[in-house]
Image: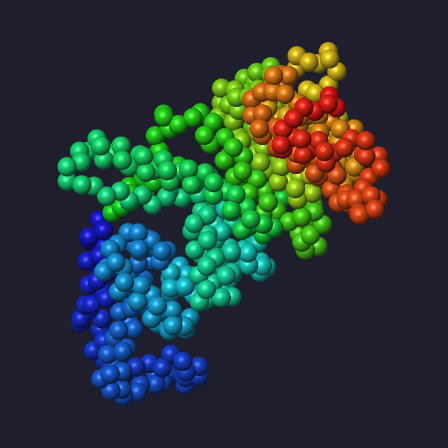
Length: 505
């Protein structure tokens, strides 16, 4: 238990007479590099020096005991122990960090012990000296880094490199702690005397529900923090961290899972999508990286990381229910990974037959990821094949015979946003006129009124992307694009803002 552990650690820190070396009046000079063979250097020292040496030996013994008890992260001390208990232990770690034992000293410290006191540089050197079979040295912060990242979120290499370059700056470590969604969040709920056990469990679930909402938004920030920091290994699966909807309750650190019976069915669908996108953004852009590294993602690598096929797929997978494609649990993170591959310029490795398989056999998140990823990969090119794929998911661009085609509103919004990326800066008249009409279309005339605001917002963003960098008129009335002058874009947009009848329709 925690009480036994505290007693054990404090007995080492404040104990007397438990180390035989404390009673000696000599000290072995650890900093002397050359010692004559068969001869020991013994120096007479005063009482102050002996007391300092005894304290240093106790500190180092305490660090080894903490590692043996499984304490490897100093940040856990604040959560696991009271302040009065954690503060003396943190002071010990600070003293050992200023004066760590050398590799040639009598204390045989492990890399975990050096990492516990914040000396990642010595931990790396110790790990390198122990790894006799290692034949290469990886760059810090990349996928091949010797720093282990058991959470697969890419934050541990960043924290390690930051602590080595800036040992007194803990901002990266603090940001990584805030953005890590692969560990249970710390849950502390005060309990009054009159609160029953049933009410206390309800209070914990209510607070845990609020904390889990924050956890579901963490992948967005993690994607920005870890952008372009991973060089993938072709023979290994791509690491995608988990989103843990659970809490860690002190003082026993028992894990409390979130009760999802009262939560919406699709609560974690789009957060999982963004989690996969954040993981995919760790990849380098196409053409970047070292010459010997995997700087261009291949089709084989993408299909290798494709999730297992579903057992009982339905006929129509493009409905509004993201979980309706199969009786099994779908992998929504893969759709976000596909979008990230397109944003980094790697999705062009797939053929159109692979794209067809994704669109017909995947979930709605996979469809959205493919549409946005392919449009971003072909940004500004007006590629005909990608344009046809996007138009097939927009009912307003289909012939009347296809009017009964059911396309999810999320897929429609993604296809419209993809139009803006694909035709970026092209001043395409057909797409400009279509987007203007879609923005002013009445909801009653739209067959898919679900998420109407999101669809209209995507139309407005795409309209700006298609006509990006179009110059306005000067004082003499010149400028602008002559081919779009009769559409009166400014007047119609102003009418959409202030209200009125659009006579263009």
